Length: 246
Image (tube, rainbow, N blue to C red; front, side):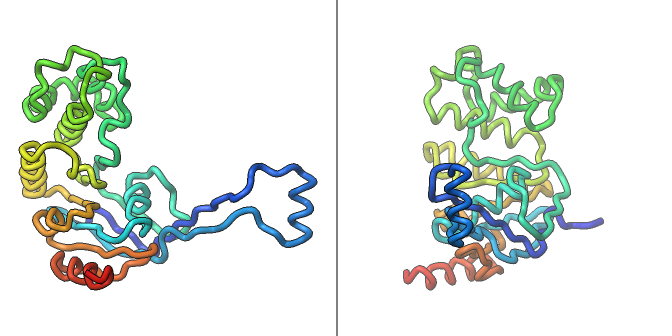
């Protein structure tokens, strides 16, 4: 049985950034004749290749604007690659901005059904998971009130609790573990370790290198869209600190 959950091969991603307001036809023709471009092509990822395996946690580290979030969004099928290939084997749960798909006027329970549908679950499947979601989030007294009355931390608890209870094969986490009180963060760490023990795959972006070292066997150092190091987490973290002059 293939142990690979995600296979990335020669991945490239280009964004076109426009520096001018929309042009009139006459202005566009004038710029074309002069060879002037009102945009800039930025390569967010350049020839990136690696694999993520079952029952493995891999950290993704690097400075800001190095392409980390772009890479996760491509794996989650939010962005399409410019070139290269992405093969994903399993259900993906992506945590970019926890609760970003919630509707504030809906109650907590209504949002669970809504968010579950986004992950491809039926209403019955969500209902079966609700006791576990409530138990993890500890929000049982708040599920019948609109989310606009929740604090940000409460919304984060609800979204994370749903996401880790939909039985994902691959978890993509972008800095979201840095939010919340210490007790809930510790609970999230334990849940992630439990899921990993069940054969799930974790791909974690974080500037909190202690989180990477605790949860991940391997790490990838990304800088200016290119992989600079890949290997044991401690080695990649050490290379990152050298690169950053720390």
